[in-house]
Length: 60
Length: 454
Image (cartoon, rainbow over all chains, first blue to last red; front, top):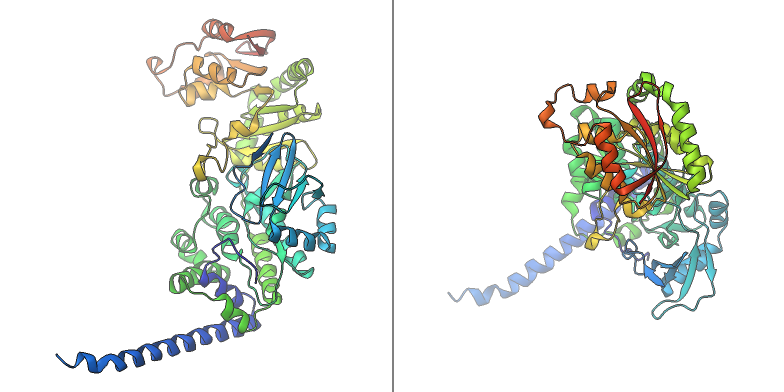
């Protein structure tokens, strides 16, 4: 990968796919979807972790 | 003696040092790998051959500790900064940046940043000077410099073309340039609705706000991002930049041309300057208050580099159009507030006069503006001219001159500094300069002096 010393800006990076035209919009959508899926997976894992801890808190 | 360029430190792979008259670039292992790849491409030969990219050769100097190779570049005659450029200079630099990126990508190379500080003007043409910006393009990588391009090229040009504001004060105050959200606030609602503004300004502002800090490069690569998308973006950006224009009107310039004294005195002032330059044989001449560059052009014709400084951008914009192939450097800067040393440790970008280092000064048609408009005492103006430690071709304008009458129309006598009359001025001048030649212009209110420091 290109080693950047420059802060490229996350939003600007995704935007430039959109600016690449129709093919780019598809790429941006796919990347966005992957992010959402990733976030969902993380959120689910976190929820699971919290529910595992729940019994400890029921003592009070 | 080797000294580091205080403006070249951000990229760990490559930085510039000065070894007496030589300009050297030190590369680390990664920088060397990038250079080897760049050097082998047809893009490099074509870009250097056409004068768009600075000449670069690898030299045999043994690399200092921590570096892998040494490159050499020719010295740029005069380094100027984007906040000293005219609108068209920044526009041409933007087009060069985009064209080089498009051509480089065709050779499998990318440019990892996009700042006008990587571009310098040599004889009226932009030249890309940062060889360290080029790296092998790896499929799936986005254009890392896109946001920087918008902040340092596109938005400043939009400021002038779409909002009627000069970009130089902004870039001088904030060298990173306006952000997308700042541009959104500046542009009128009509301009904001233009499709290109919706994308580069409004949408970028929104996405930057929403996605701050997210690691997205891997996602883009996995989603199938390719160099074709960068090229499509670059093509559209090019058309957008091409469409940005500034109608400066040339009213200032034509007004100046039509002043009675201008046409009448030009011949005599030009002849006087030629004689002064012939005596001094300077290499670097600074033309203070250069206006349309008439006298800078005379200095350039003698083989010297002429640095034309003026605070009024329209006249320099005109001069830029006529400067191709001439040894004239253009600087938009008020003489009463020349570009300071600034940036990291106040050394990253040096002060205008530290870069100019002239061995001859032209101060035609300028000191009465300093004395009467900017209220700088005549003795202080002379001390400043003396500080260049070089011969000065000076035009003295007496209080009886018609232009001075205009400049002082709303000033009272007690609001003006002493030392303005020819008699007083000659006394002040005689304390720090010797007069080599003098000539009174027609009308008897203006005197030319060829001065040498005493």
